[in-house]
Length: 147
Image 1 (cartoon, helix red, strand yellow):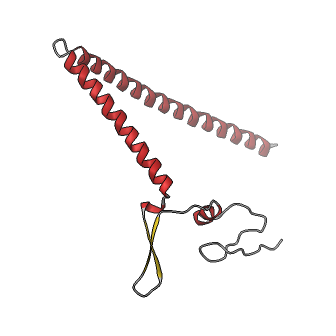
Image 2: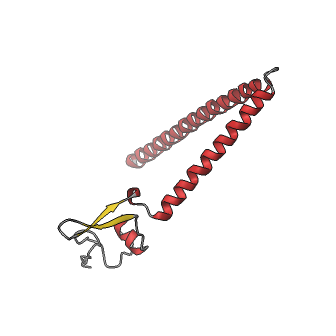
């Protein structure tokens, strides 16, 4: 079957088959979804229209969502630090919270080291099983060749 050349939205014709429904570029995806990035439209000195993209090609909705996420994250961070500071001030005589922070920090470090070690062991086990499988296939092929 002959491939038809189809025009892209931004660029030269592509070699996509006429049955293909998958977009070949981000520009096609954005055009299909009617995605409008945030731009300032203006008229240049020569009278031609111009655009100044803002927000790295993001839409107004994307910028608002990202701003809200950052505000939420830093509000949580400030609240957590405030609680920890309050706990440190309240237990300044016995330093109870400092010992608790030390214990939690050590436990976190132990968990990270254990996770890395288990991941290393798992990768080693997978490599060994693949190596055994390859050796078995080689033995089977050699046995078939000898017949």
